[in-house]
Length: 377
Image (cartoon, rainbow, N blue to C red; front, side):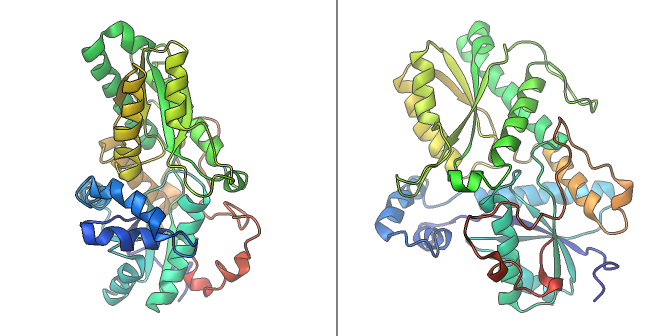
């Protein structure tokens, strides 16, 4: 087939996946760590986080809600494309989704990944997973991938709205003075330093935090004409990390959110708004690591804490994802602005070969082994 002339005929929402009942939990976790020699004893510890929530992660339900919201937005814009759903680690798995797409007659898909940043696990690994799933399903499809969107106006405005709501909740519970002096603690998933050196992960997060904080403080919106906020917060923020795993001798990005909250309390802070800026929905790293563990740490140290919502199905975020789809559709891309706030500009559509690498891995044997028509761009 001629990849240049082919039109996209479906969108594939591509995500991490999560268990939906207790019997799913251990098989799901084994999928997550496949090839890493993680013992079941360690997985059993993590499994307890899921069992505390009836063995069900909210991520699939939230992705189904996002699909429904996107379908409504597509209909409003006249985008006549079905939205399919495939996961890396649990049903519906990518290979099954691609087999179903092929059976339905689709030939060129646009993968919309639920990760806003560049990293191995958040970008390159999804490309590898898509390539492997195409081979596993034995289908002749083209799959392109939407760019990362950490600085897209839809993501930034939605997150700023969630933070503004959290500050209002803090003010209602503890007074305007406490909310005005609250520290914004932006949180994302930690990754090994070896991975961070080969990706723009940290830089993109700092830019996203800066843009959100600037908007919340009423200091502008990056110049695109979007909303600004009233000046009710003094503008101090930090970026910290959660969900560190792996052997202790391997360095990961720090500080950990719990260590940071303890340090803020020791330094005299009264209140924090914890902002899960690294996550687009409330999956386990949010509802356990933040809503349980970080909340307990804040309480132990006398810190008032409110957790801001993830962008989820916020209308601005949904509209932003539709923008990202439109800018990649063959035949219409030249009529859509590639929107981005701040100084880093819109990220590239086709990832460079050396982007988000794991050091010392032989990528010729993992990414480039799929036929050209099957390589995700």
